[in-house]
Length: 315
Image (cartoon, rainbow, N blue to C red):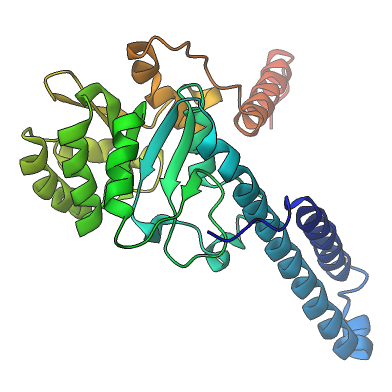
């Protein structure tokens, strides 16, 4: 495993500074005074150069900020893995990890894996197997790096010691092997299957392969698809938990209107029964300002219109 050279703080600070400069530059270059036909005609080449430069600076800032987050994740992984506190094992197809290219867009946002780790932190720290050959991890679960020959033994040992196993649904051979080992190793209540923005036909394929392994029938995609619009358009998203007799229960990603503005909030609502089964205190996520503000605006406008109508005003 590569050593962590920095905590990532400097990278993130420089990245944020460049992002601010690049975005501010793009904002200035699109002001009405600068985009007038006369200005564009006389300074068109300069405007193009500055526009490309501001966009480049913003992209560099996004890249450096993301890289800083990766260094920070790498720097804290060792302390998490060696800590005596309970761990949770997260198993997923490597293709679900954010690459640098995929992350440049939402680089200022937390990844879904980071949000999942935060939601599950009352159970323990989230641990995952690192992608072979990667120099820096996706922010989220602490990575354990192992060889191709040893990774299966590492997974088995982690399953025996973990408090909870979370497997992201996929039809890959390795994920199905991990599901098989989980059925053999952990109690049913300690297993969660994460279904994340899967197409209905993809979920059905996973279900067909998982049912013989589990010895029970997972919920049909047709039943779950009605929850798909909550998170990921027309896709299946949620968790599947199990009772002591392996009876599955689908936990949809949905929550109250004012508290469901992110994946983290939806996941926290979905996992409330799991918190309760473990005897862990569950607290609702905070009210989402992004959802509250439009509601307040609508109420104010409606109230103003009601006052006008009451006083005899018409359009």
